[in-house]
Length: 399
Image (tube, rainbow, N blue to C red; front, side, top):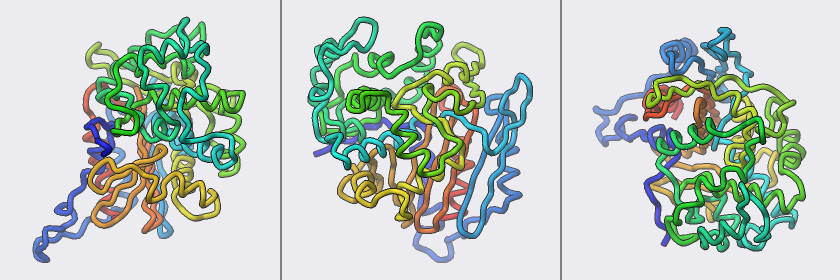
């Protein structure tokens, strides 16, 4: 039996905590209330009220066949007070993991990658990964890693032990700040130690635990399979065919665009840090995508819908009924995407929470509605309740 632990990417659990009562589902017609239908003026008002020293800017897209709202408010850079615009690009953190999941399945369909092959079959023990450490050293530190499969890594069922999100955010931000960017780019192997030097939380395939380390291993595997960094295949197979013209692979394709500033309020250190200079060079498979709200919405919709953009066999492997892992009541996960049924309506989503950057990415097939939002600020304490409130109001309006 697959065991689900309590770890989750922050901004997932709270965002999706809508209840039947909130939509009047108590069983009594008299007690039912009709959710308020939000107007463009309502969206603007909500965005205006959201801006603070901690979150200087918001971009919001709400799109359906009947209506489209795309606006920005606030600043992209508080030093020069450059206004945020709707096509600004930012890192979307783990919301970009579906990009890697999609590439892996595409390679599997072409016979270049076996999703159910073990890690040890791809990586030579002598492969140097970090400060003199080899793959064999990592296998010795955590022997279970050699037995994990690519599919398990992509679905977070490998057994790698996750870290509570806010502890992770604090530890990750400190690790990034301590790195000497002048010597090397931040590659996957540079942060393998981040998740791997602790015992696994369970045997491979026996539990679901969200952790970045698995996607770091996938990055190494893809590089070995392709003989080069996966960025080129991401561009030729996904970004260009889908028309994601504002998007590029983080840290590797820096010449394709520029990200906005992302402000991390370290309340433990009593300072606000702009993580833009670091994320410009950050090249991790766990956080691979720099994109716009429109491109992010496009990617999720292309994967979920039968629009001809993605081969049906690939979609089935990614999010087919039998390929998703149950991670909660009416909630499933696979290849970087959550699927949840709320008030009888199915939602697909993948949101990101990284130092200085928070992103929301939701698609509702029933109404063909996309909701994507960027916030270029957050902190090292649980401050997602404000984000949740804004997005919950939108969800209640469209569900």
